[in-house]
Length: 201
Image 1 (cartoon, one colour):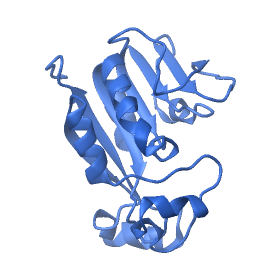
Image 2 (cartoon, rainbow, N blue to C red; image 1 turned 60 degrees about the vertical axis):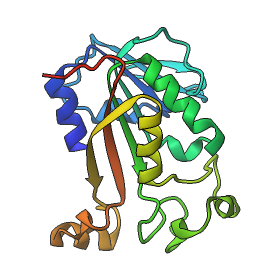
Image 3 (cartoon, one colour; image 1 turned 90 degrees about the vertical axis):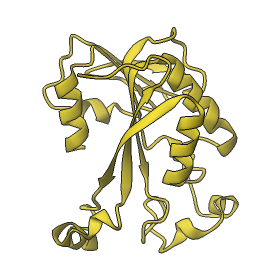
Image 4 (cartoon, rainbow, N blue to C red; image 1 turned 120 degrees about the vertical axis):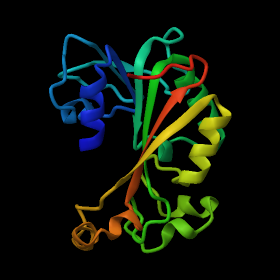
């Protein structure tokens, strides 16, 4: 999250859309966030946003014009979207993203699955995940699958950050020893819509 926050601060995006925003926690974690910018969060549930405008909508059918936002984000959203709907989600984000897309997802193959806390659960086939998931979770896609799908939908992936598991007791040990680079709890993917071929400077 620190890398993402500094990334947003550095490039001064004038409009941000967070797809699957929940309670808007992402906006709370961005340091020095200029609240005069256009800040919109989309979620299926109605929430009251403090620092942003909350809109009830389906992330696979975004109610915005093309290139409406300079930055589009989706944190911990993909595991809530059925496999058959993920490409539509990527296409919609590609349509409304003017400059940059940032996606965060758990590491499907982390030692402890981050939603069920079951060991090695991610190695099971996706169609077996539903028996353990609750609260709208479907299945966590792999990093390879997401990167491949993003490229198919018109994004160029330029950076992938690995997330530490500091909230887990052994996660702190992984961080101190540097093993979190081999066993990250999740990933943050940075991509740009190839339709514009823009470079952020």
